Length: 128
Image (cartoon, rainbow, N blue to C red; front, side, top):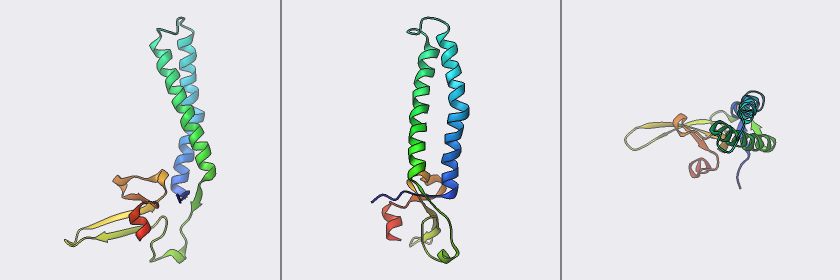
C-alpha cells in the first residue's frame, strides 16, 4: 500500500509550483509559440518546435500536479507525537563507529536524499 501523505510544507511547495506553471510560465511559453508561428513555415522553425514541446511538458506536469494535490492528505505535527517516530518526524541513526545520520520521514513527492528526506514507503521508515 502506497501512502498518499505529505507534510504541509511539501503540499505548499507543490501548490506553488502548480500556480507558477499555470499562471506565469505557461502564458510566457504560449506567447513564444504564437510569435514563432507568426514567422511562417513551422516545419523548419526551431523556436516553434522547441516551445511547442516545452508547452506539452508543462501541460503534462500541470495535469499531474492537479491530480496529485487532490489525492494527497496533509499530515500536521501534533504534540502527542513527541518522542516517537511518525510521518514528518526527524530522527537520528547511529552506526557502530558512532557516526550519526539525521533523516526525516516524508511522502514520495517530497523525497530528497540530499536533505535527509526518506519516503514513508521505504523499508527503513517502515521498520522504524
